[in-house]
Image (tube, rainbow, N blue to C red; front, side, top):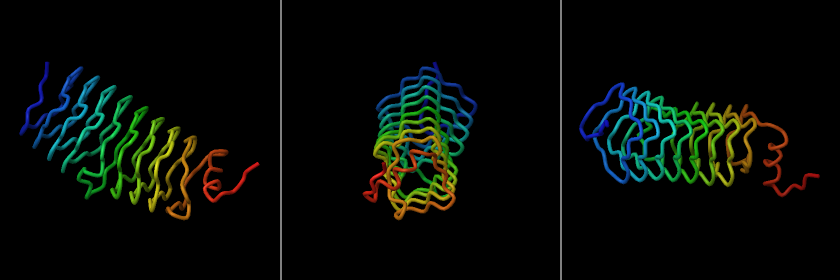
Length: 195
């Protein structure tokens, strides 16, 4: 059984079935670590670094990342709902990769997450207001009631995504990619009737 302690640096560690719920860890670095079937729900990571880490089939619901940094992290088949990602330190930008994850009820307001990938994800009622999503991808993701307001969606990829609904005039959409018929939702927001 591998444990996590504060004020440590962990490199190339492989964690499996670790239960670390409703706890706090601070001043800790994780470099090239993998987490499989781990439970971190409602835990707090303060002033921590995650670099080149992979989370697979893990639960991070309601986690807090206070003044922490992430670089080139991958999340697969994981639960990530209710996270305020805008608390992360993103001065240099934040590129994250999500595949088949539930990241509903999240907050990404005002942060630079350009080139991030959201593939086949459930993204309900998540707020991307004033975020930089340039060249991000939402391929095959469900964006029900998700908010895009004053968001940079330049060259963003919405192909095969579903349930997105936002006003094009309130966002930057140059060279963004969409699929038919879902793209018609962008007309419906203006009250148009499509028959």
